Image (cartoon, rainbow over the protein chains, first blue to last red):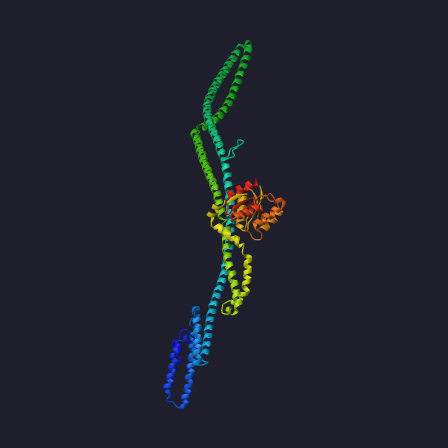
Length: 460
Length: 120
């Protein structure tokens, strides 16, 4: 009964690693059986003894398994452990021959298997993490490629729109310049070709016309005065005609008296009677002439009266009104000149804005090159990712060769060996000049360094 | 005005170069890599080539070497327009036969000045 208790105090031997609770339980079972032995019939005692032995064996095996899960002794105690094993073997030979070494081996094997399982479990988890990372890496790569493509499309669209805007702005500026030249340009052959010239010529013509109106008005006043004189003279002529008619009447009367006197004289007065009749005929013709002159004079007077009325009407037109119209037209042309100056200033402003746009264009052209630099930076990010994936892939392949069962519990392991070489080949084909891209990204990310190190433009 | 070819794998860069040089009256053709550039160079005589360094299919340095082997492009100015600013890369370009080296991003006015200078 000493044998089970001896391993309890052992520290380095095979039995020494058994837990104390096993030895105490075995001793308790044995004591209980021994205590009840004297009260049992022989057959029952033999049966219960067999049960006790079986129980103690089971407890021993279970205790060894529990001991196997304890940490193994380190290398420093390996030698002393070996020596203790030898002592254990000697003790086993003397006390329980053949039983304890077998149980010890079983327990050791079980402990090793358990440790192996734990290591395998750990390795599976590492492999699972590696595969998950690999998948995440692939997704990241796809996303980066998508970003590069989207940036390219967006930048291209921006560049197109920008070009369209600039082209329109250029046309607009040119039209503004044409307008400026059109409004400010000089006339080559006297005809008004520009607004400014048109205003000048209009002003000249209007002034001249206004002066003519004033002059005509003055002339008409003078002509009215002249016509007044002419009319008075026609009235005087009319008076003269009346005098002529009176003279003719008196002459005719005298001739009639002379004819009467000649008749009274007889034949001696016959000659004088002829003369008197001739004088009367002349007087009558003189009267007829006078009537005809009066008729003509009357027509002249009617014409003069009409002209006189027209001229009075013309001279009565307000010269001030003509001058006022002239002033208004001049004001309008001055206003037009002011507007013309405003147009010129606006066009000049447009021209200045066009120059500013030219400067802005240069800035935008520089800024739009960000796409190239960004793409290279993103491609530079892909290379370390690819390198890591390659390393992971090779490690996983080697692990797979070592133990295929490692992948049995990893989700998605089925396509791992087939998929990875394919994806690696595809990515290797699409990866654009990794080393160069990295350098470019590094160069682009440090402009100050670049500027310090070398000029941006160099002609060899 | 001059016939100029811009070679760059980035569409925006080609657009910007084309826009900048067209605005001063140059005629610009575009190629997205060295191989396409060589094809275009054989079809039409160019007065100037502006090329990127890092491109798929055929890079800029290889393009210069190939162009310099063609008799009609032995003395044609070739400018490199790239993000590369390291001295060893510049040296590589110089040895290959590049006329000048411009680091991205380029300033339009500066590019026009350089182009006018190399075109003489």
